[in-house]
Amino acid sequence: MEVLVLPTPADVARRAAEVVIDGLGAARRPEPVLGLATGSSPLGLYAELAAAVRAGRLDLTRARGFALDEYVGLPVGHPQSYREVLLREVCGPLGLAPERLHVPDGSGRDEDELVAGAAAYDRLIADAGGVDVQILGIGANGHLGFNEPGSALSSRTRVKRLSDRTRHDNARFFAGIDDVPTHCVTQGLGTVLDARRLVLVASGPGKSEAVAAALEGPLSASCPASVLQWHADATAVLDETAAARLRNRDYYDASAAGL
Image (cartoon, one colour):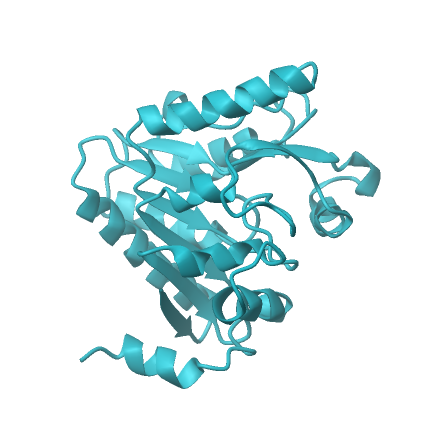
């Protein structure tokens, strides 16, 4: 795992974009597959990727995008559904065709439909040849996607209950906490680990505890993001405040400097 610490969130976005572009190029596939996170963490990264598209350094017209997760129970077209968020923030700016964006189905009428849809999503990723580069954020409680603490490290796409902390953290995107869904469909940690490259972005002091647990703590279901330690090609791109609790900072900086 590579840990890159940059001065500011803007620097994080620029460097993470280069890691993503490099990973897509290394895949050497005519139809690369990009794994898409939502939330505030990757917004700067998406802006940098959009700039690369405008500059002709990146072409995603033939790419396919797979979202990490989706809320259960939001009506079609709800502005805070992750499909709508990605249509606004990714498809248009990055030139990714809306019909090539795939999002877990949170519209099932009952648990059986949701479970079947989750399994179908896992198969859809496999049928696309797997994810070449998966963009990730991290929750303040260490969640990855919507894999809350206690999630099985080998889990596949499935229905999950959101923790109270996650719902309160996400309430800023809704009118209030009562409007935040209680459940989601999320790629499992095992599904995430299948991607060829993982790129985690994190900024701000509120993420420092989770980042330290994920990158330097034990591999544990108590911190789902610790599965990054198990991946052969994972890069964490952090700003100074998100990296504030890392014990091995000197080593990461020396390693990033190269030979």
